[in-house]
Image 1 (tube, helix red, strand yellow):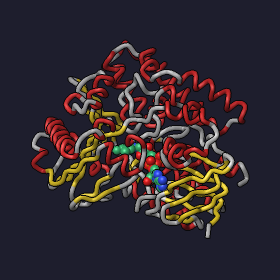
Image 2: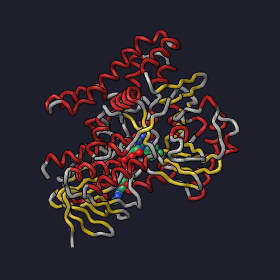
Image 3: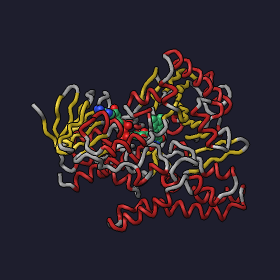
Image 4: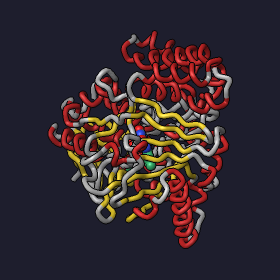
Length: 497
Ligand SMILES: Cc1cc2nc3c(=O)[nH]c(=O)nc-3n(C[C@H](O)[C@H](O)[C@H](O)COP(=O)(O)OP(=O)(O)OC[C@H]3O[C@@H](n4cnc5c(N)ncnc54)[C@H](O)[C@@H]3O)c2cc1C
């Protein structure tokens, strides 16, 4: 016997959870099917020995009460269930012979003071750069508040501004290579160095973080996932875990439901896919798609980068006093981020830019009460890990983990003696967790050619099928995927379905 729902959602990553929560709160009959035994996709924690580690989330941007993201929490019925912690410092950035520690409060004032002191000739350029970044953020941000005609023309203007890499925007106003690097430092959060990442995404992230600060959920990412799960169930939604959607049923170019491994056919008036966009249209729909140009276009698009990450569980370790309130530290062996990015893709830990997160400094008593945990990640290439034999793979992981410990030791001498537990995640493990092609962490790479309106919209080439994930507009990351979940939910509500 088949079961019929208003909306069937494939995948319980944050995009799928957001769409499910909003739609069930609106009274829709929703079912969400997740192939793993837990929800959240990349948003996950895991335990090794006595240590609990945050698998992916370091920070979220734009979660302040004044933001659209907060509105999404409210629309999803979770706003009062999630409390956010804010680190004292946005980040510390260490370059050869120069370092900065950026505060969370009065950040822009701090930048002006620092630039006046260390780069006085760049003051006017920095002011103009900040104005330009603000202009893009504000105009993108209140797009939802303007009417459709103005929205499209405004978006087109933003797109023409954003249709360049972030480096051209920065370099237009800033001449000093050290200041260029300092202002381009947030690139690891976007997965591409400034000369490759869209200036649209760079502007959005830069202003979001520097204006509203960085946020981390009290209790870790599981708090977010549990709050969404509870809201969906409380509003009558159904969640199935441990079941894999094998197929999205398409009849006459119209999605009518899904077929799962364990529950068979589940009919829906609409289907939302939180799964990888390429997998959705190729493996899950297959030949039943009439728009072949669309599939060709998808095959030409490039997935974002994946990461190699090491986790360390430490016992009785006390950080040097100067670092006792740090949370994120960027370790840059050079000012040339393109060079450090390619070093990472070559698995050259010594020459790569690393991002170190001192989780226990922020989440004191919230995810770990007695021991402390930290993690380090760098961009990484799926293909090279996937091509390794089992033994090569294990050896490489160990060797890279040791190189990361050596980099850590140069910052915190003697720390290696306190490491009790080590764990690693590679692009292959990330692919296994979510099914995302090449372990991509931000959906499609966030290049100018795949940004803004050039990214796939919520509604694609099949009627009644919507995408809600990092693979679709507006872009990757937890907040981007939540926005895509809302876009899909609103598209369905607007159809009156
Ligand atoms: C190491 C790491 C660090 C990160 N750091 C940050 C950070 O600090 N801040 C930030 O904002 N973002 C960060 N990100 C990125 C962010 O986590 C992701 O962009 C975001 O969570 C993606 O959400 P999503 O909705 O696209 O779903 P995903 O997390 O990709 O999940 C998709 C879900 O769909 C399920 N699924 C797929 N196919 C099927 C099927 N056929 N049947 C049933 N279920 C299926 C999968 O099992 C999975 O649960 C990080 C990611 C990683 C990996």
